[in-house]
Amino acid sequence: MKIAFLGPEGSYSHLAAKAFLQTESTEKSVPGSWDECIPFRNFPEVLDAVAYGRVDGAAVPIENSLQGGVSQNLDLLQATEDLYAVKEYVLSIEHRLVYKEGVSPSEIGRVYSHRQALDQCSRYLDREMPFASLRETESTAFGLTKAMEDDSGKSAAIVGSHVVRLRNGFVMGEECISDEKNNFTHFLLVKKGAKRLPAHSNRIFFSAVCPHRKGSLVELLQVIAKYDINMTKIESRPVKERPGNFRFFIEADCDVGDEKVQEMISAIRKNTLECKLLGAYDAGK
Image 1 (cartoon, rainbow, N blue to C red):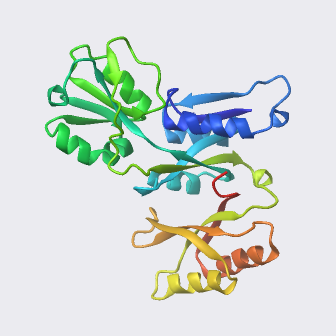
Image 2 (cartoon, rainbow, N blue to C red):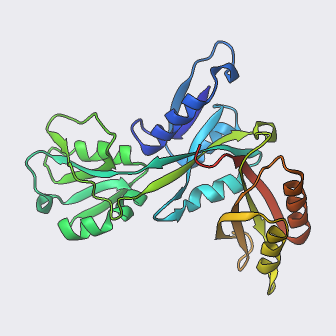
């Protein structure tokens, strides 16, 4: 079993990939292969690796409890054919500052990290190092590498508290610097082919594009309500090829194997311009 993640090793995505790998039976692996997590440079490459069969699955962050949906990954999951989310994993996020030993925050001129980590620590950064330049990197692990390449002591990085490998002379702060301490990211295990979907689940994830007229979203919600199904989230994204139109990403508490759920999906397809099942899984597992 091979699972792709946003690298390098040590990123939050790597932690999620390892958690998914532990839950996947090695009996599903190709004979002669071995279980491993494989890093990629960005999320398009991560999902392409699944689509083209280079890996068996991918760990993809889809929502953060502070910032909502990860827009890029919602769009990628929608745009890539025949990919489905089959498992969910909820990862607790605790951000720490890594810096050169003996350097005070006021002396730091650059802070490297993933955009979401920088945003989630914005109050700390504004208070402790208001003049520091915030440098966005593809992952928290890439940011750590950049900071530790600077021997001047003027660079720092925001990483997860799980990071243990630091270059000599660099230390990790003991304080969680997140603006909100109760911070979680939802990851999905994405695989190729509808046959990978579980026979039963307690949640489904789908998208729909309503006709561009008044009341069309209400009509969509009424269909869901008719089948007595509880939505756990709804998020909108612009339809890129049709300005003014929006695609709604919806998660709902229900069993993909339930006949009435299949009836609901059929009814939604009849009343919307597009409807795509994106996944089915058990919540928080």
